[in-house]
Each structure stands twice: as C-alpha cells, then as structure tokens.
Length: 194
Ligand code: GTP
Ligand code: MG
Image 1 (cartoon, protein in one colour):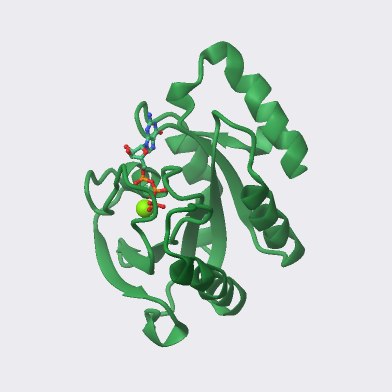
Image 2 (image 1 turned 135 degrees about the horizontal axis):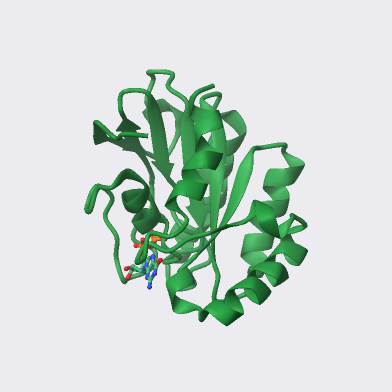
C-alpha cells in the first residue's frame, strides 16, 4: 500500500496504556536483535520511524505506530537475550502474553526469526504458543542477505520442519536488500483490511 503517514503513538506496558482508537493491529515479535524494528521501517519505507540498535534488548515496552490513520503496527520487545536484567526478563512474558491474549484489536502477528540459524527453543515456544491460542501468525526469516543463495532453501526447509508449516508459507526477508517486502505485505493486507 501507499504509506501516507506513519507516526509513533505511544509506548505501553499494560492495557491502560494501549491506544483506544480501535484500529486493527499487527504485532511484530522475535528474539532480541533479530531485526524487528528494521523490518518495520523497511515495510513502511521510513528510515528511522522505529529505533534500531546494534545493542540487543533496547525495545522494552510495547511500541505503537499508527499507519495511514487506518491500522497500527506494534513493535514488541525482543525475547531471549541473556544480558537483559532479570527483572526485565521476568516482565517480558506477562507483558506480552497479556497483550496477545486480551487485545481485541490484534489482527495478527509477524513472527521474525533469523534465516542464518534454525529457530531457537524460544522461537519454537512462542510459535507453538501462538498456534495453540489460534492467533494468526506469519513466520518471517530475516537477514536473508547474510545467507548464500545456495543455503537459503535448505535453511528455510529446516525451519519449516521445526515450525510445522509449509516452506511456501514462510517469508524470506532482508532489511538490507528489501527482499520479501511485497510478499510480507501480501500476507498482512487481509488482516488490516478486515
Ligand atoms: P531489539 O529491539 O533490541 O529486540 O532488536 P530488533 O529485533 O528490533 O533488531 P534491530 O532492527 O534493531 O536490528 C538489530 C541489528 O541487526 C541492527 O544492527 C540492524 O542493522 C541489523 N539488521 C536488521 N535486519 C537486518 C537484515 O535484514 N540484514 C542485515 N544484514 N542486518 C540486519
Ligand atoms: Mg527493536
């Protein structure tokens, strides 16, 4: 779609802080440093809407961005980063789980993993949890630019087996080359056009 406007709305750690406009939401989840914020910026064609960082664990709240006054992207904090202080790690589960289980506006989730490595135990735990709760979710394998072409399909196939989804249902993505942008939008449009 044409992105006419993309603006930061608010950050929240609990439902009282969520926006109240009732617009459909797409959430983005994945390990710390996997490239969630970069992916959102590329999808929206905005270089610096969402802060990215070489330091894992920067995003520690739910961050809401309103797009075209029509739908909302939610950048979730990353999981699985050992150096995040324990009190913050303890918060992650309840904060995200509360959002995912109670948010009526949530239309679907983009689950971002790393094409270079098989899904981690944390990745599989979230993916299986999403399935068991019947949430719409699309698996994305990012940093594809870091994987030689000849290795991409084998890596995607390994992920597909572990996730239990067809390899054709997985979106390969790169924030560096922008590959996968169209394929991912095609998966998101049905969610935001209700
Ligand atoms: P947290 O908010 O800390 O959980 O991280 P994040 O998942 O939002 O990751 P972020 O987008 O900040 O990116 C982390 C690092 O990976 C940055 O140094 C990015 O430049 C880099 N990066 C993100 N996506 C890609 C990609 O597709 N290819 C390459 N080569 N680097 C990427
Ligand atoms: Mg981030």
